[in-house]
Image 1 (tube, rainbow, N blue to C red):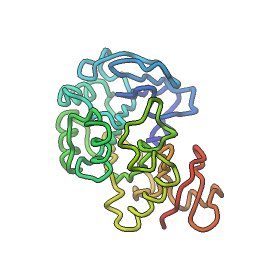
Image 2: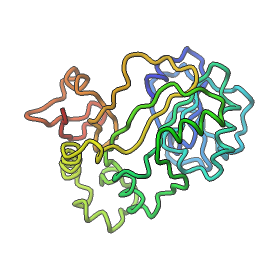
Image 3: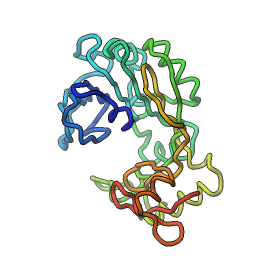
Amino acid sequence: MLDLIERLPPGARVLDLGARSGSFHTDRPDLVIVRADLEIAPARGDGAYVAADAARLPFREAAFDLIISNHSLEHFEALEETLHEIGRTVRPGGAFYVAVPDAGTLTDRIYRWLARGGGHVNAFRSADQVATLVERLTGLPHRATRDLYSSLSFLNRRNFTTRPPRKIALFAFGSERFLAVLLWILRMGSGGLSRYGWAFYFGDVPLRGNLDAWINVCVRCGAGRSEAFLRKCGVLGRGISYHCPDCGGWNLLTH
């Protein structure tokens, strides 16, 4: 997602759909960023915020160069209408990035159990299902898919802004070190146990390099990084531990 943003020309328009307080951060002040959600969150990041229904967007046709739906499609009740609106408001030659959870994964099941459904109204169970649906309703061609791996950051007590549910006691009350060890065990036991969803690229996407999955995902901020990148940053500690270059969270490295 951030690669797509970095490659946009100055003045490009980006819609962050289902953004809450912002689903991504960028240091590019030369972009026009609009963040839309049903309600505007009290805490806000960069960009302009608009209260809007995703199924009835208040924007003209072809308004955006890039539309991002970062873990929001699973929350939209009027999914088909929303995808039609995305197809209407992205410009010809524009791009659409989607990240959604796989409803059959262990991580998503824990999330929905802990959060009493977590607001998920759409259950996606295959990458082909998502790609076919988005292509049909937006008119944008599917270019690539990447597997996403879990960070368990939604269990991290550092990330709770309200009183955590009692069920969090089963996860050492959200201890970051406990979660890092648990995540490492899930990765070592079977990569499938730590996978949680997919990222999709639609439209005119300037992909470069490979789209190999990044299995090392920070248990605090959820940033996924390759082992080569972590070594280049010099954040690897003794043994197999490292501190996230984005937030400083303590993690265990999986090779």
